[in-house]
Amino acid sequence: MLGEKLRAALEKLRTAPLISDETVEEAIREIQRALIASDVDVNLVFNLSSEIRELAKKKPPEGLTRKEFIIKKTYELLANLLGGAKQPPQKPKRILLLGLFGQGKTTTAAKLALWYKKRGLNVALICADVHRPASYEQLKQLAEQIDVTFYGDKEEKDACKIVEKGLKELKKKDLIIVDSAGRSALDDKLIEEIKAIKKVFNPDQIWLVLSADIGQLARTQAKAFHDAVGVNGIILTKMDGSAKGGGTLAACAETKASVYFIGTGEKVSELEQFDAFRYLSRIMGYGDLQALIEKAKEITEQELSPEQMLSEEFNLKIFYKQLEATKKLGPLSKVAEMLGLKAFVPKEELELTEEKLNTFKVIMDSMTEQELLNPDIIDSSRIRRIAKGSGKPEASVRELLRHYRKMAKIYKKLQKLSKGKEFSQDIDIEKLLKKFTVKKKRFKIR
Ligand SMILES: Nc1nc2c(ncn2[C@@H]2O[C@H](COP(=O)(O)OP(=O)(O)O)[C@@H](O)[C@H]2O)c(=O)[nH]1
Ligand SMILES: [Mg+2]
Figure 1 (cartoon, protein in one colour):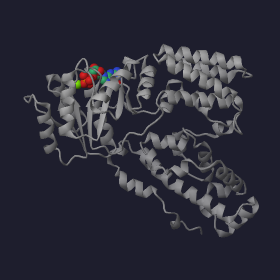
Figure 2 (cartoon, protein in one colour; figure 1 turned 180 degrees about the vertical axis):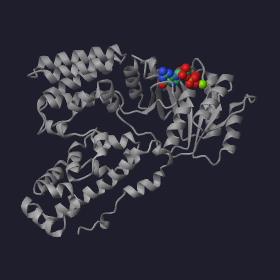
Figure 3 (cartoon, helix red, strand yellow; figure 1 turned 120 degrees about the vertical axis):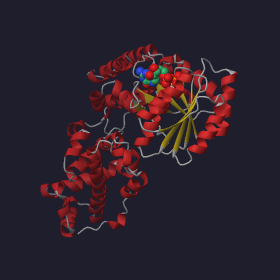
Figure 4 (cartoon, helix red, strand yellow; figure 1 turned 180 degrees about the horizontal axis):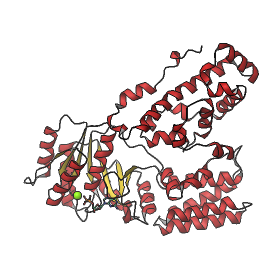
């Protein structure tokens, strides 16, 4: 499978005692084989190869060895090839699902309904597939299973009328998802029908559902649907079983339409937000990847798993580890992501500059163990002492404490949330966001 092959290629680089041009070429060849075997377009593969060759010539940035630099960059290039990571809209109002027969539209409609329901939206499903009587029953049953309002009319043969009536009935809903009919090919009749539905439904999101096993064909299908009605998102289903998943992703990335979600099984819960970095890390084996992407070894050693992290009392020591590890897959963002809360952790916390981190480190080195474990005891006179000892201004010490407190709040909230199972069902997202936006002035250092 793609993941194993890619891992083998990167492992070759990682374990090589010295990276020569030959080692790089060998790794490139393996990556090429892996990608082509999973149906990635040959031109894309060759482009990637020359990009890797180019970066192997570059001087690595300060603090990274040549090996680390090449591995990290190769990984990033691969993730970009597979579409990077784009956040799906948090509050869509009307989603129209398109796609040919059997691609997974109806299943996905229910999966999306559940996903958004868990994030606090009041969701309804409309069956606008008038050609297959079975899809009415299928969607109705799924809707019942996830306890979401369903609208449909078995007798009505005009999909537009169903949508029109549905919209009237479902005025109070936050999100309405329409499951449209599919055909075996995108012919004029299908285009006509979805254009008409688009007109009455007036969706803010038109998402194409594609099955991962179509490989490079994804490109032509996405283009055809896009030219016909405009597509602003893609959902890839059956990513659980397809050897062509990589090729399908690459083909989608080429069309510039974002893959927002992937389906990873037949169950309604088997839908994942798509993030190429996470996808890669999963198919390549997560633990190894951590080691690959974290630049400094000490960070990896100190790193905590989200579970571990949340089981501990938050203090400056953990804060420090967290700061160091807040890279792309750092523990805090991972925790937040796990809980579907990534958007609520202020970006500036996740992206403190290297310089700031170093200042904070120096400051923390001047603190006593007691202060690190229980930062609340740090009063003005301690701040003066710490500033003197570290040779940093008092303002920096205060700034550090400010960041710490901001994170401590978020941390507490995450701890609480991670305890409740269905936590995300009753979160008022707006309220939560307000809670997390901490006004600087409110902090007073005793
Ligand atoms: N393994 C797997 N099967 C899926 C996934 N999504 C849909 N299916 C299956 O694919 C088949 C067709 O799905 P359906 O939603 O009826 O497709 P539609 O014709 O586009 O509405 C069904 O048997 C689904 O259970 C997925 O992500 N993984
Ligand atoms: Mg269907």
